[in-house]
Length: 70
Image (cartoon, rainbow, N blue to C red):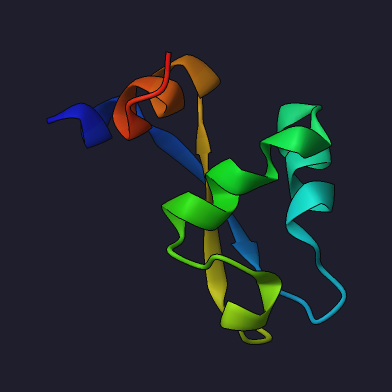
């Protein structure tokens, strides 16, 4: 299964968090915010609650393969 190729950083969501800031921190590219949103099935920050566990998948090559991007 493709999911086994992924590793994760666990992040507890804070009310001040933004997807683009997490993408900048973990992927060095804020434009990749959608990966975190899509993987956590949260289209916007408002879909998450404070303290909720958010998984930041990596490495990016495996993430792209997992979500069907090339």
